[in-house]
Amino acid sequence: MRDLLASLKISDPEHPDVSVTHESGWCLSAYPSGLLVWENVEDGTQPKHMAAVPADQVLRMWLALAAGDIAWISRFEWRDGYGSESAA
Figure (cartoon, rainbow, N blue to C red):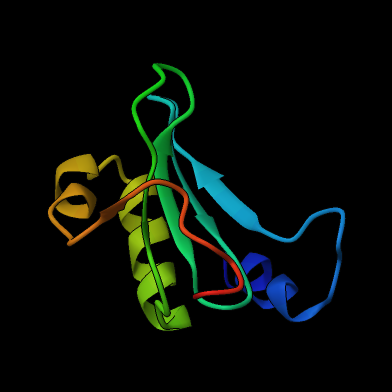
């Protein structure tokens, strides 16, 4: 997962984010600016986001998601919607 996170340092307009998805459909997508998007890609749950999330926090959250700790991730202060990569 560290390599995945490090890949954000390589500019790729076609693939601006990297993500980890749990088998339940919950997904955390990270962008170079620190924008982090939390959504369930299977059930249509409205997406939420946080801005300026440090890389070490993204890594902890990805590890929690891989372990299935959806409740822990959901407790953070998420804002509605996808947010804005340019505003993050």
